[in-house]
Length: 286
Ligand SMILES: C[S@@+](CC[C@H](N)C(=O)[O-])C[C@H]1O[C@@H](n2cnc3c(N)ncnc32)[C@H](O)[C@@H]1O
Image (cartoon, rainbow, N blue to C red; front, side):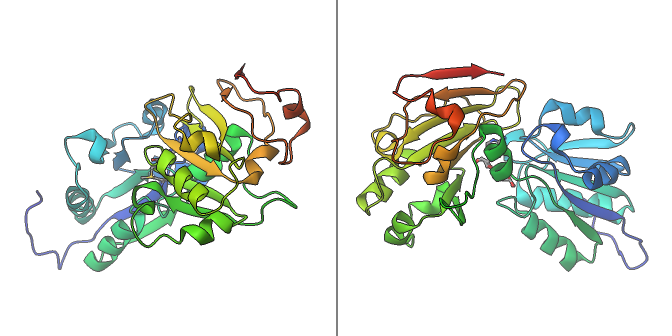
């Protein structure tokens, strides 16, 4: 806990709320990298890969923060307290957050807190898991003639009252569900119950941009029956919609794609995918 002091005569430092991307340090933007290099203190999220440490300036105080870390900064209130303490000591603080800080990252809360406390801050965007997962899996999020809309959803609360399931089930949008691996089966069931096609393709992209990234492609029916399951302990993003079938096969070191079940041929298919039709499992190691 920081001491309560009279801050009237203190010059606060600067807090940079930085989006670090989905996990691999090479997805950090140049602006993010520059801000990081100037930091006296780096307060970083648990989901960031080890490779980030090499980018921290020598001599900077590195503090892991977030629920997964246990120790310091395990709660949001503690993170606020740490930001306050170091900024009021006149330090430059890099608050490094997974993906983009303003997408399910509590970046808005941290920014509002700093604003209320009179601490200067800047917001530096990052590649969100949405884009990281789409590129890792070769899945276009919009695709001409197939999907013109992306719906960003959050799996934890999707099943609570208030979700307009008939509207979601009718939608031609690509549905992107963050924090949705646990609720995947129930979400697929709900969509089916409300009229979505049982052949609608669904992808689970795990550990996007990490060395062990994996993509599993299936259909809504098979997902509702419980056949689409996480293969790793890492984070996963669920993509649902016809655009999933427009998947291509980018060359990516360490990428590992598993096709558990083929989506229906009723959906557009890329040339590279045509040869993989007919069910069964396909593994590609890049
Ligand atoms: C608390 S949210 C943070 C989202 C983050 N602010 C962003 O913009 O990506 C964490 C969720 O993001 C998704 N996620 C984060 N990193 C991921 C990755 N490398 N691969 C797949 N999904 C990821 C998962 O759905 C995970 O449960």
